[in-house]
Length: 215
Figure: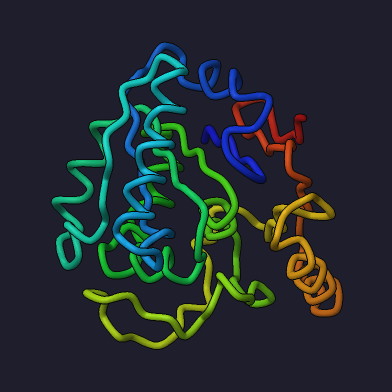
Protein backbone atom coordinates (compact mmCIF):
# COMPACT_ATOMS: atom_id res chain seq x y z
CA UNK A 1 0.00 0.00 0.00
CA UNK A 2 1.33 3.43 -1.00
CA UNK A 3 -0.11 6.56 0.63
CA UNK A 4 0.86 10.22 0.72
CA UNK A 5 -1.47 11.96 3.17
CA UNK A 6 -0.97 15.69 3.64
CA UNK A 7 -2.53 18.00 6.20
CA UNK A 8 -3.20 20.61 3.51
CA UNK A 9 -2.52 20.65 -0.23
CA UNK A 10 0.41 18.70 -1.57
CA UNK A 11 2.66 20.06 1.17
CA UNK A 12 6.39 20.81 0.98
CA UNK A 13 7.37 17.16 0.40
CA UNK A 14 5.32 16.75 -2.78
CA UNK A 15 8.25 15.00 -4.47
CA UNK A 16 7.31 12.01 -2.29
CA UNK A 17 4.31 11.58 -4.59
CA UNK A 18 6.59 11.20 -7.60
CA UNK A 19 8.75 8.71 -5.73
CA UNK A 20 5.77 6.60 -4.73
CA UNK A 21 4.43 6.63 -8.30
CA UNK A 22 7.56 4.93 -9.69
CA UNK A 23 7.09 6.53 -13.08
CA UNK A 24 3.29 6.51 -13.24
CA UNK A 25 1.64 9.67 -14.54
CA UNK A 26 -2.14 9.18 -14.69
CA UNK A 27 -3.89 10.93 -11.80
CA UNK A 28 -7.59 10.70 -10.92
CA UNK A 29 -8.81 13.71 -8.96
CA UNK A 30 -11.77 13.32 -6.58
CA UNK A 31 -13.25 16.68 -5.62
CA UNK A 32 -16.52 15.52 -4.08
CA UNK A 33 -15.63 16.75 -0.59
CA UNK A 34 -16.19 20.19 -2.16
CA UNK A 35 -19.70 19.47 -3.42
CA UNK A 36 -21.11 21.67 -0.66
CA UNK A 37 -19.69 24.73 -2.44
CA UNK A 38 -21.23 26.59 -5.37
CA UNK A 39 -20.48 25.18 -8.84
CA UNK A 40 -18.32 28.24 -9.53
CA UNK A 41 -16.26 27.81 -6.38
CA UNK A 42 -15.90 24.09 -7.06
CA UNK A 43 -14.72 24.75 -10.63
CA UNK A 44 -12.08 27.19 -9.36
CA UNK A 45 -10.81 24.58 -6.92
CA UNK A 46 -10.67 21.90 -9.60
CA UNK A 47 -8.62 24.18 -11.83
CA UNK A 48 -6.18 24.79 -8.98
CA UNK A 49 -5.79 21.11 -8.08
CA UNK A 50 -5.31 20.12 -11.72
CA UNK A 51 -2.51 22.67 -12.08
CA UNK A 52 -0.82 21.47 -8.89
CA UNK A 53 -0.70 17.93 -10.24
CA UNK A 54 0.24 18.99 -13.75
CA UNK A 55 3.19 20.92 -12.30
CA UNK A 56 4.40 17.60 -10.87
CA UNK A 57 4.49 16.20 -14.40
CA UNK A 58 1.27 14.23 -13.97
CA UNK A 59 -1.75 13.89 -16.25
CA UNK A 60 -4.76 14.71 -14.03
CA UNK A 61 -8.39 13.92 -14.83
CA UNK A 62 -11.41 14.48 -12.61
CA UNK A 63 -13.26 11.46 -11.27
CA UNK A 64 -16.60 12.90 -10.17
CA UNK A 65 -18.12 10.18 -8.01
CA UNK A 66 -21.60 11.53 -8.74
CA UNK A 67 -21.28 10.01 -12.21
CA UNK A 68 -21.02 6.55 -10.64
CA UNK A 69 -23.73 6.71 -8.00
CA UNK A 70 -25.22 3.22 -8.11
CA UNK A 71 -22.54 1.92 -10.53
CA UNK A 72 -19.63 0.49 -8.52
CA UNK A 73 -18.54 -1.84 -11.34
CA UNK A 74 -18.16 1.09 -13.70
CA UNK A 75 -16.28 3.04 -11.04
CA UNK A 76 -13.86 0.19 -10.43
CA UNK A 77 -13.02 -0.01 -14.12
CA UNK A 78 -12.36 3.74 -14.08
CA UNK A 79 -10.21 3.74 -10.94
CA UNK A 80 -8.00 0.96 -12.24
CA UNK A 81 -6.91 3.24 -15.09
CA UNK A 82 -5.00 5.52 -12.75
CA UNK A 83 -1.57 5.45 -11.12
CA UNK A 84 -2.61 7.99 -8.49
CA UNK A 85 -5.91 8.81 -6.81
CA UNK A 86 -5.85 12.32 -5.37
CA UNK A 87 -8.69 13.27 -2.98
CA UNK A 88 -9.25 16.91 -2.11
CA UNK A 89 -10.30 18.20 1.29
CA UNK A 90 -13.59 19.86 2.19
CA UNK A 91 -16.45 18.23 4.08
CA UNK A 92 -15.52 14.75 5.26
CA UNK A 93 -19.20 13.82 5.56
CA UNK A 94 -20.05 14.92 2.01
CA UNK A 95 -17.07 12.94 0.77
CA UNK A 96 -18.13 9.91 2.81
CA UNK A 97 -21.64 10.12 1.35
CA UNK A 98 -20.21 10.24 -2.17
CA UNK A 99 -17.97 7.26 -1.46
CA UNK A 100 -20.96 5.26 -0.19
CA UNK A 101 -23.33 6.19 -3.04
CA UNK A 102 -20.75 5.25 -5.68
CA UNK A 103 -19.53 2.10 -3.94
CA UNK A 104 -16.02 3.55 -3.62
CA UNK A 105 -16.11 2.91 0.14
CA UNK A 106 -16.20 -0.83 -0.60
CA UNK A 107 -13.76 -0.69 -3.53
CA UNK A 108 -10.94 1.42 -2.11
CA UNK A 109 -9.79 -0.81 0.77
CA UNK A 110 -9.35 -3.75 -1.60
CA UNK A 111 -7.70 -1.72 -4.36
CA UNK A 112 -5.24 -0.18 -1.90
CA UNK A 113 -4.48 -3.58 -0.36
CA UNK A 114 -3.54 -4.91 -3.80
CA UNK A 115 -1.45 -1.77 -4.47
CA UNK A 116 -3.50 -0.83 -7.55
CA UNK A 117 -2.47 2.84 -7.26
CA UNK A 118 -1.08 5.47 -4.91
CA UNK A 119 -3.67 7.20 -2.72
CA UNK A 120 -2.98 10.82 -1.92
CA UNK A 121 -5.00 13.74 -0.64
CA UNK A 122 -5.43 16.13 2.22
CA UNK A 123 -7.74 17.16 5.06
CA UNK A 124 -11.12 15.40 4.55
CA UNK A 125 -9.51 13.29 1.83
CA UNK A 126 -7.29 11.62 4.42
CA UNK A 127 -9.59 11.72 7.46
CA UNK A 128 -12.00 9.39 5.67
CA UNK A 129 -9.40 6.59 5.68
CA UNK A 130 -9.55 6.09 9.45
CA UNK A 131 -11.85 3.83 11.48
CA UNK A 132 -14.40 6.50 12.44
CA UNK A 133 -15.57 10.01 11.65
CA UNK A 134 -16.81 10.63 15.17
CA UNK A 135 -15.14 13.62 16.75
CA UNK A 136 -14.87 15.35 13.35
CA UNK A 137 -17.63 17.94 13.40
CA UNK A 138 -17.62 21.63 12.62
CA UNK A 139 -18.75 24.43 10.33
CA UNK A 140 -17.48 22.68 7.18
CA UNK A 141 -17.83 19.12 8.47
CA UNK A 142 -21.58 19.21 9.05
CA UNK A 143 -22.76 15.59 9.51
CA UNK A 144 -26.34 16.39 8.49
CA UNK A 145 -25.67 18.22 5.22
CA UNK A 146 -26.80 16.40 2.07
CA UNK A 147 -25.88 18.08 -1.27
CA UNK A 148 -28.35 18.22 -4.13
CA UNK A 149 -28.39 14.98 -6.10
CA UNK A 150 -27.13 12.87 -3.18
CA UNK A 151 -29.19 10.10 -1.55
CA UNK A 152 -30.67 11.37 1.72
CA UNK A 153 -29.26 8.57 3.85
CA UNK A 154 -28.38 8.53 7.57
CA UNK A 155 -25.15 10.22 8.59
CA UNK A 156 -22.21 7.90 7.81
CA UNK A 157 -20.08 7.81 10.96
CA UNK A 158 -17.74 4.99 9.95
CA UNK A 159 -14.51 5.63 8.08
CA UNK A 160 -13.09 3.28 5.44
CA UNK A 161 -10.86 1.50 7.95
CA UNK A 162 -7.83 1.62 5.65
CA UNK A 163 -5.86 3.06 8.56
CA UNK A 164 -6.07 1.80 12.17
CA UNK A 165 -5.99 5.37 13.49
CA UNK A 166 -7.84 8.63 12.95
CA UNK A 167 -6.08 11.67 11.49
CA UNK A 168 -6.40 15.20 12.86
CA UNK A 169 -5.16 17.61 10.14
CA UNK A 170 -4.48 21.35 10.59
CA UNK A 171 -3.41 20.67 14.18
CA UNK A 172 -2.22 23.88 15.87
CA UNK A 173 -1.72 25.51 12.47
CA UNK A 174 -2.67 28.83 10.91
CA UNK A 175 -5.89 27.36 9.53
CA UNK A 176 -9.55 28.32 10.08
CA UNK A 177 -10.38 24.81 11.29
CA UNK A 178 -7.53 24.45 13.80
CA UNK A 179 -9.77 25.24 16.77
CA UNK A 180 -12.20 22.53 15.67
CA UNK A 181 -9.32 20.08 15.38
CA UNK A 182 -8.38 20.77 19.02
CA UNK A 183 -11.85 19.53 19.94
CA UNK A 184 -11.38 16.48 17.71
CA UNK A 185 -8.11 15.62 19.43
CA UNK A 186 -9.80 15.95 22.83
CA UNK A 187 -12.56 13.60 21.63
CA UNK A 188 -10.04 11.04 20.37
CA UNK A 189 -8.18 11.10 23.68
CA UNK A 190 -11.34 10.92 25.80
CA UNK A 191 -12.69 7.99 23.75
CA UNK A 192 -9.37 6.13 23.46
CA UNK A 193 -9.28 6.39 19.66
CA UNK A 194 -5.74 6.07 18.24
CA UNK A 195 -4.89 9.13 16.15
CA UNK A 196 -2.12 11.06 14.42
CA UNK A 197 -2.22 14.86 14.59
CA UNK A 198 -0.70 16.61 11.57
CA UNK A 199 0.31 20.24 11.42
CA UNK A 200 -0.03 21.99 8.06
CA UNK A 201 3.20 21.24 6.20
CA UNK A 202 3.34 17.67 7.51
CA UNK A 203 2.36 14.47 5.68
CA UNK A 204 2.09 10.77 6.42
CA UNK A 205 3.95 8.54 3.94
CA UNK A 206 3.18 4.83 3.78
CA UNK A 207 5.12 2.45 1.54
CA UNK A 208 6.75 -0.96 1.70
CA UNK A 209 9.33 0.36 4.19
CA UNK A 210 6.72 1.41 6.74
CA UNK A 211 4.95 4.57 7.92
CA UNK A 212 6.52 7.91 8.72
CA UNK A 213 5.61 11.59 9.11
CA UNK A 214 7.56 13.99 6.87
CA UNK A 215 7.68 17.78 6.69
